[in-house]
Image (cartoon, rainbow, N blue to C red; front, side):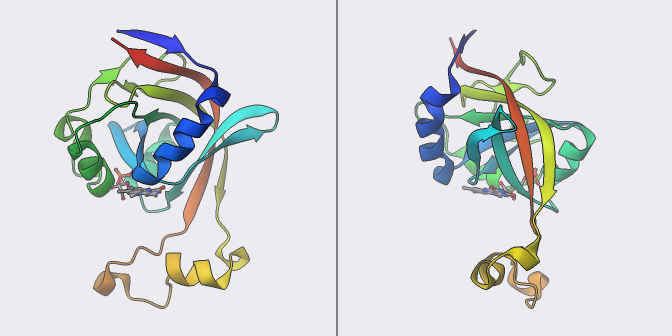
Length: 179
Ligand SMILES: Cc1cc2nc3c(=O)[nH]c(=O)nc-3n(C[C@H](O)[C@H](O)[C@H](O)COP(=O)(O)O)c2cc1C
């Protein structure tokens, strides 16, 4: 298995197009854990290449990031087992070994401590440089109502009303895993 270094700007389009279907964000603290993300921003902040991820406050991943502020972002190239998104996008690392259940192959990282994922080979290794809990009072009423329904009993409806926390990760390495 080899890693071919890539220029991030050459893959920004691929990453943005992949996001709505779901890509993986992996963390390593209590355990190695991958979750599906559909939101993400790639660009430049403080003169550095950055991937910003938006993680709801109550997620196990948020706890993992507090303990070890590094993550990998993994994007598919070809087709993959749909089980990967079903498991990593619905189950929680709190009570599931998602790496095992989703049949993911961990790959030794280059710079950070969090592994990459062979099945989703485009990889960004990120080190958190800034964490910002979203201020719901500054959000439009429409988004507040649809995304963070505080007047709704979430136990009855299943609505998730936790605010998102934005993790700005400096992209410290980028590559594609090849056979
Ligand atoms: C397509 C898709 C996109 C998702 N995007 C996000 C996201 O951007 N942020 C987020 O907090 N949860 C998102 N989720 C939900 C998490 O993947 C899901 O709650 C997961 O079980 C969290 O894992 P964890 O508890 O191990 O952290 C998404 C789920 C799917 C299926």
